[in-house]
Length: 257
Length: 261
Image (tube, rainbow over all chains, first blue to last red; front, side, top):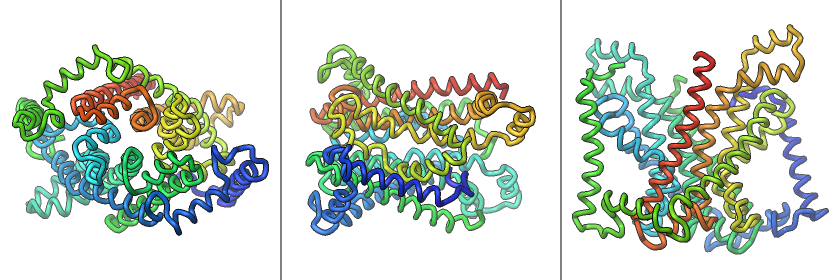
């Protein structure tokens, strides 16, 4: 839905946010229709943000929590890309590889990544390793599927032409296979990055000693709505920033598009 | 489409079988080797036995079927709510420019919050009641409903709209007879994505705020360090999720057939 509504007046959007913010302020601070125990006022949220940034909350300051979460997402995501893209490409290229791997893949695929969390905890405990495993899994499936589909979208003409010209195998992979599958691969990367964040938050909510999910679960335990809002905003902003970064990489990697 | 050299069908089937056999053989081998305690890695047969046992004897208060029913009830409530609100909203956003201009920025900003991040508020607002999981499922299932209905309405062929307009169709008839039918394929595609995300959010919600359901079964299995119970729960989640998707895929196929595509 990103570029679909170009030409939409920006001021309306800005005005909407101003109206919403004013309503939030009025309802929580002036009329107090919404009590502070249910949803914080803008002032309380600001204080919570100051507290976690300066003093710290849930054993660390905000930057440390963000670094912890981003680190886990990157570990899981990068490992999934390193293993998943070649596997997907191989499945797309070779019918035999597809036949060998696909049935097992189809068997495991309907299990959502979040359902792997308890298993990961039984196997690896509450530390970082369990979270990286689950995040890896969340990213792995979309990466494989899209790399696989990417190969299948390459124009057969291109492949035939390369074959006729007797292009050596390594050059073929570098010059035809990977660039041809690239658009779909990046679609997969975007999907899997989103899945990584969801999974990370869930894993950290269930048990962690640091990270944004830990801030959320601690705030829920302390019944501290303002800090919950800060935690949610932290999750949203970090996720958005990583998606934006991926977009930049995508434009660099595919200058021809 | 033969990309690499054509492989005969019989060989492909044999390879598929070999893949599955390898998967289960490696699993069974590790389980039987004694390197890993059965508590952590039960054999496939042990998992199947546990699965069957769970359907007969209650675990944490309920049998597996009862857990599934209670999960599915929550899912249906959250998903139904997302569909009931999301699709009309999406269509209206696609049709009325001013609504699009007002709602889209807020919607885009909220979309970056992972559904599961609503868990603390779900717990705060609803305690352990049904409202909590429903809120989380809703926040997972809602965006695809809105986005696909929006796309459906936004990309109706302009020619159709103009034709209807020249024929003097009323605003209401435009909506019911041009807009809605034209957006159905996109909406149904959205339903599938939305159901998948909703089901996944349900599992997440039940891992944290629930005292029944398959997600709860997983957590308790984890607390008891019983891998076979955890795996049985995962299988149940996979089967139900697959069934929901198959149902919607059937719906999609029927609609496409009806329209002769």
